[in-house]
Amino acid sequence: MKRTPIIRAAVFLAVALAAAAQTAPKAGAPGPTTREMALLCWQEFGELVPARIRTVLVPFGSLEPHGVIPNGTDSLAPEAMARDIAARVDALIAPALNFGLTDAMKAYPGAVSIPAEVYAPFAEAVLDNLAVQGFKNIIVLNGHGGNTAALNAAAARVANARRVRTLVVNWWTLADDITKAVFKQNGGHAGNNETAYIQAFLPAHVHPERYKPEMASPNAPAGAYSAVPVASTILLYEPGQGYPSFDAAQAKEYFRKVNDRVAGLVLETIARWDQAGVYR
Image (cartoon, rainbow, N blue to C red):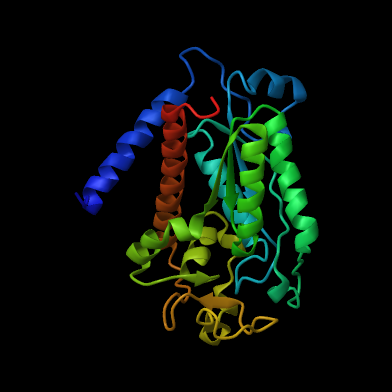
């Protein structure tokens, strides 16, 4: 039987709530002084992981042009996401890897691209070390599409070698229907969706006064052509759709709904792993 969107949403919510109940701290148990690994002392980390906390959120991003929002958007977004959902999914937050694979954009001012042969093993080493430290659920919050293949492969190798559970989340794809619901159209790289997400928590570094619609162009149809450097720093998923709106209320709504979706996916996935008894 095909489920309607409302039924699917209800099932998704029920599973996520059950997972939240399982991962919630026991009554009277002290919580961590911070969710950020970089701010914990080693003694507290040792007390928390894995006895108290088994999940880590790992932001991965890049440094590249994004229209009139920060070059670091691909790192800033998953970092903000991690901070917003960490308590909900009972996770610690690993420091972000702020550089990624962005050869097609490295010609633009401020961009940095790491060669794939360097990036892939480094990313895998980060995940592997987190597994060695005792985390059972390693959740990669990826902010940059160019990283995806390398992160998927690294996460799979670490999961199988270390007997841990890994999940790689590309938030903009996961939130595709949210983008279309909030903006009534599709999004884009540095388009309405990414711009709104950053505007929600970092409005001082969004510059609508620098924006011109001609800064945007549609992505090339799959296989049609490839330009290096890219001709525009705002790349629309569909022609004529996805231009930044700079609407503060829309930005707050989008930020909240995207984070709720990601938190729900993390909780649901962990609940299903636990239900199946894999690598417990």
